[in-house]
Every structure is written in C-alpha cells, then in structure tokens.
Image 1 (cartoon, rainbow, N blue to C red):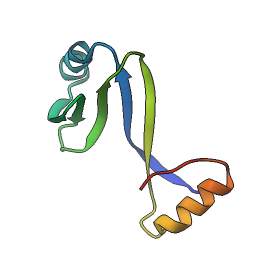
Image 2: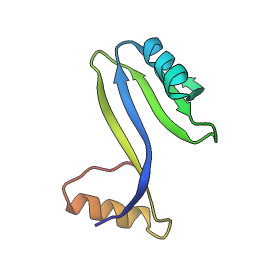
Image 3: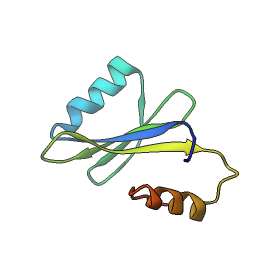
Length: 90
C-alpha cells in the first residue's frame, strides 16, 4: 500500500469555466496562476497548485493527485498501483 501524505490537487471538468473560476476566487480565496487552452490553474496563498479546472460538457472530478513520501520511486509506486488495478501518470 502507498501511504499518501495529503491530496496535492484536484482536477474538475466544468461546462461553465468562468463561473467556477469566480467561485474559487471569491468564495474559496484561490487565485488564477495560469491558463492553458481550456484549462485554468488555481493556487492558494502560498502558490501551491490546488485546483485545475477544465472546460468540458459534463461536470465531474476527473483527477486527484496525492503527495507521497519522496523516498518512494515513481517506478515502485506505479508497480504498486498497477498491482491494485489502478492507473497512474507521471
């Protein structure tokens, strides 16, 4: 089992990108750090990536990134996740 230290960031698909940006900026207190095509990257006050919003036809949480111990190698983590039937991306 891989022990996650914390959630790194979450990615959400949304049909109303500007409305979600407004919510995360004015209600949650995040700020836009950058844009790349149909994606917007939001950070907290320390600059840590927190939320990625992507323009899509359906709303969903599309990804969750976890922070793990720096002592684990990417290869080892990939093998452990695959053994549990999970996909991973580096």
